[in-house]
Image 1 (cartoon, rainbow, N blue to C red):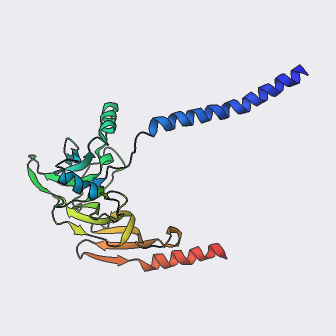
Image 2 (image 1 turned 120 degrees about the vertical axis):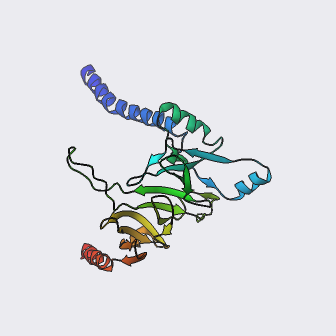
Image 3 (image 1 turned 90 degrees about the vertical axis):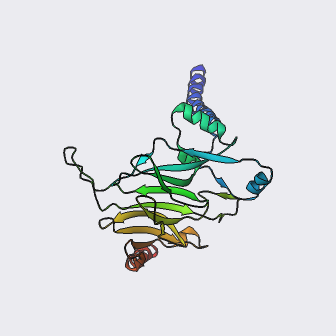
Length: 261
């Protein structure tokens, strides 16, 4: 009787203890990480900003990467400028810097400053408030072996960005929750050109010697995501024209129909 009782206790402990230990670890981890929101810092544009302006209070300042970042196939450099909200992000910034994992992207790109090889300012990307969630510079051809000459790909002539200018979520902030469109500029930040409108970009890639951009997207509408079909298109940089790849879209629809047969 005692042996069976002891065996039962051993079995129960073997099952129950790991469960409670797992719960303890989960709660401990959640408590340590709950104090921080790792989403990018929002840019205040609503009523809070207007009130702060009336009260002569600064809500936000700039944060930026140093040293300046080199631009492929160019002697120019760029500095992505982020936004930092005073007090709200102060502790997070201090702790992350102390830990050595500070990333200005956590505080939202607000603009981009461009410099020449002598570190002289040659311009800035934008002249008004915006949220920039991505800056992409193609790094040219890849070489499979280290001893191959790293020839610079001279066809790389543009920088791509995801930019949103309007508070489409109506929460008084510019951030990743707002609609963003695809833009490109020259390697010096000039000639900013809008590539897409009313399209939610999933991903994109420079193709055909960097003369075009292949884009996967969904139309910006009120349809549930599962009913909003995936679409494809190619943007030609020289002619500034966008061409939908209808054949791929229709073929995917046809393949999808077979799921219900």
